[in-house]
Length: 79
Picture 1 (cartoon, rainbow, N blue to C red):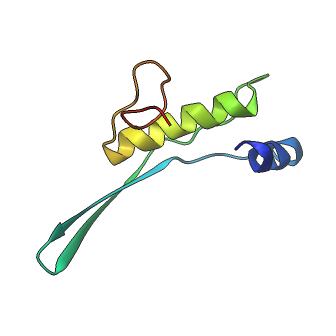
Picture 2 (picture 1 turned 45 degrees about the vertical axis):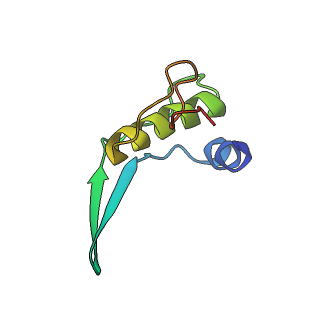
């Protein structure tokens, strides 16, 4: 959903930092890996939904998740 993103970007030009989180269980411990991506900005005339897809793709890559080949969205089924 892009409504909140459109609302924010209409009022502010702010840097966006994609963050990926990956965790695994090992016995009683949870191992957490946090990866911080490069700062990005909305491109001139870039629609909010395209920006969201781009950011989600970066977050998926940082988290180690594959992107669906047809939709470019995170996850095997593209939803």
